[in-house]
Length: 265
Ligand SMILES: O=C(OP(=O)(O)O)[C@H](O)COP(=O)(O)O
Image 1 (cartoon, helix red, strand yellow):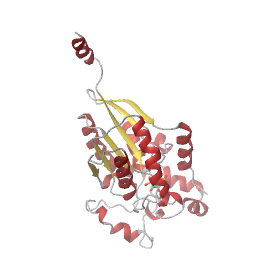
Image 2 (image 1 turned 180 degrees about the vertical axis):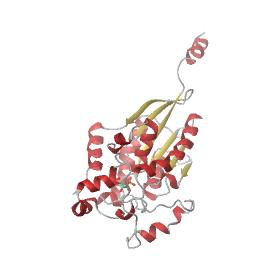
Image 3 (image 1 turned 90 degrees about the vertical axis):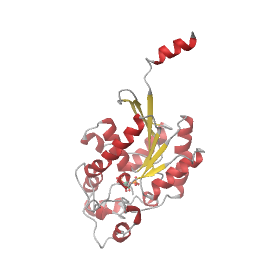
């Protein structure tokens, strides 16, 4: 009788699946508040600690488990994904790397300190380059010290001919992330539990695609390192039913989001 009632009732309870998005831990370039983009900066010691003390406890406390992880080809995201999995005792979970989840290419700003660029060009111009939806930074030049290491980095071998950027706006980043999001969405709706470990701009692009935010609204969103963001989908309708919940201590998250938004000293 109990089993019968349970199966009858279960018809009315929506079948859900969750997506978790995590921005990688602090990188060597985040320390000095440098534009990083397609430069392959490693995690800093603090970045490693953030993965272990911010992301992992939040995921474990919420009893989240994963069937597959999507990440970019850049070390800071791959290392964060590996650390999360090994410290959740699930290193067996497959990790799929894709160049389309790489950070937005920051053009000739790559390697520059945001404060120094602001001192030269003004804070308004820096905020335009960082957050205006359709503004791309100046294209990277051969004189930029990271030009050759980026162009010749084998991690980008899968970038199709004609698609290797020399700078990207938020809009351009959203366009390359969108087909990737559709692939991940199909996996989610089949019931796979998905973790995405990505970058600040890519996480913002995903937030816009998932939540349907306007171009103006997404300019104001900032994503802290290693704070998991959870979305819930109805598997029957495919619709987003709960969204954008950041896991962790609200005061910590507020402080870290403000630090990301700031240009720095
Ligand atoms: O490489 C970057 O992002 P990442 O550290 O998330 O990979 C950017 O430098 C982040 O800078 P922004 O917050 O000014 O877009």
